[in-house]
Image (cartoon, rainbow, N blue to C red; front, side):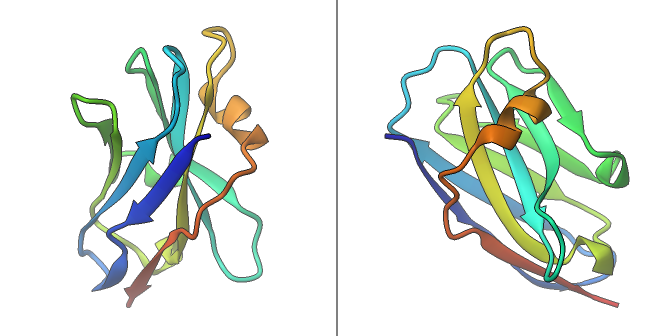
Amino acid sequence: QVQLVESGGGSVQAGGSLRLSCAASGYTYSRYCMGWFRQAPGKEREWVATISSGGNTGYRDSVKGRFIIAQDDAKSTLFLQMNSLKPEDTAMYYCALVRWDTVSWCFRLLQNFRDWGQGTQVTVSS
């Protein structure tokens, strides 16, 4: 069973940086998609960034050029480096992992993920 544990959130002022981590265990997929999602109060959960086992990355437009998604060499930890943070980035952040069919876009496959963890809170003040 896949286990994902998010950490690294906190409170920062606008323009600041945070690095989120997601420790992943219990998966055996050789081809997979991993990603970060976020959910602000009163809003739908939305995808933020994705990475495939092949190293392909994707970002929603509002974070392009500010956020970087990456994995460690052991592929056991997912990171999200968040720079130039804005108040609208305030949300609970979650990571997700699904098997990748190597054909579909990761952000679409990750929409099917259901085993959400506790997430990590990011609060950006103006």
